[in-house]
Amino acid sequence: MSCADVCIDMDYDDDNVFFSVRDVIARKEHKCCECGCPIKIGDTFEYAKGKNDDFWTARTCSDCAEIRNTFVCGTWVYGMLYESIQESMFPVWLETGPIDCLAKIESLSARNKLREAYEEWRK
Image (spheres, rainbow, N blue to C red):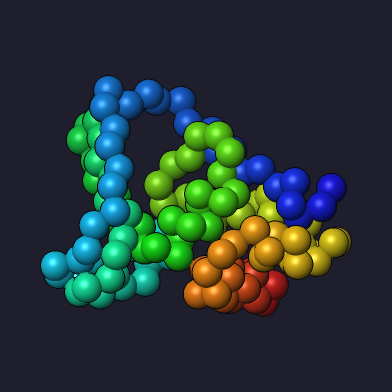
C-alpha cells in the first residue's frame, strides 16, 4: 500500500437530521476542532453545524479542512481527524515515506501541519 492509497473512513453510527458547512472569515478568535490551534480574527475557516441527537457546531482551520478533504473518503467525526491519521496514514509513512501523501496537499502550510503531526506522533 502506498500513502496515496490511504483512505480515512471513521466509524459513525448516527445520521444527521440536517448538516451544513461553509467557509467563513473569523470575526473573533476560535479554536480548531481538529488540531486545537487558534483560528485568528480575519482567518478563513470551515464552519459546520448540524443536528443528530443534539445540535452541534464545529470550526476547522483551513489547513485541517484541506487535510480532511484530501484524505477522508467516507464518514468522519469532527475532532477525530488526527487520531484517524495516526491509525491509518502514519504507519504507512513509516514503511513507504510521506512523499506521495504530501503531494496530494496543495498548500504548504497544510503540508507542514501534517509533517509536524507526524513528527509529534513519532516521539
